[in-house]
Amino acid sequence: MIKLRKNCLISLVAFAVVIQIRTSAYAQAANLDAAKKEGRVVVYGTVVPQVMNVIHRAFEKKYAIKIEYWRGSATQVVDRAVTERRAGKPAFDVTEASGAGTILMKREGLFARYVPPSSERFPDFVKEKDALTTAWRALPIGILYNTDLVKAAETPKTWDDLLNAKWKKKISMPDPTRHATTTQFLWNLQKLKGEKWLDYVRALARQEPHLVESLAPVANVIIRGEADVGIAYIKYVKQYKGPIAYAMMDKFISEPSYISLSGKAPNPEAGKLYMEYLCSGEGQKAVAEDGEFVFFPGIYPPIKDAEKVVPNMVFTDNPSGEELKKLITEFRKIFFSK
Image 1 (tube, one colour):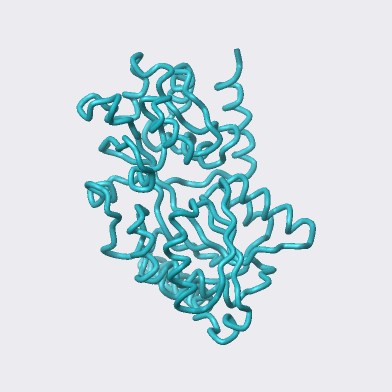
Image 2 (cartoon, helix red, strand yellow):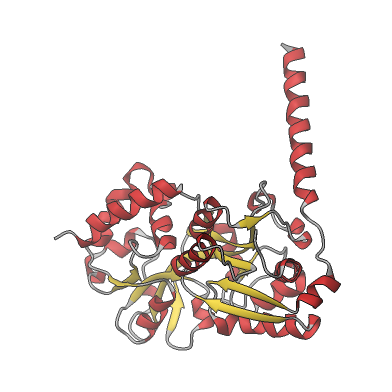
């Protein structure tokens, strides 16, 4: 028995070493001269331009490499990238998207193996062993509210509080049949609700929420007073002007957001350099200043009690592509069946 355990331990250690060597092999610095010769990097991402402009200006000033940034929802990024790849004409170097969106693109074989060296300082649990994607920020989802319409003491403090009758027709959230990130979010409520998570989704649908195309419009709906509360990213309280705040909760469903290098990148070295900059202390600090929760140790966004949010994050798992399709079909029945 002792010999068996020893052999198992040796095997586990050997496996860990292989994984480490495999990951390190792809954690190589970009070729700066080659990146500058390429002269540009094309990025398809989900972050609103006003946030990315800060880091993009800093990158362009530092490296004299132009960034062409196209922004869409996670679903739109997936659709555009996959369509281009299938047509044999991928125009992008880097994608930035949620876990669910990234899984779909990975299954299409869109990515090349590359690990930004600076990401080695990130927590181990966010590191992808296949080296095809790199988590570079966290996206905690919480309950946002209009401060002119709702007093802080009256805000929902838990996900169950949203089911109170007083919030009926006063909630905004993305349509889970059109927005993959929200599909994933609802599915991950099982981490908090267990087997009753789908009952919760049905109860939420009975609240007749104001459905929008993605998470970003939720903030605008709340600011305009078209909904009192909403389900959206906490970062929006920093990124949007108006009477909007978030409720402190004991658990925040949070997903990593990923950057990935195209397997057919027109500008591969510039793409690598861009990814490395996003993961560097300099890049992470610049992003955090605009409200983003990042993985670089000791860096927090200038949002009230941000340091209290971080330890209360419950990170999402990613459903398979087939599971995602089944979930969308189920949510269509729940939210739209009369």
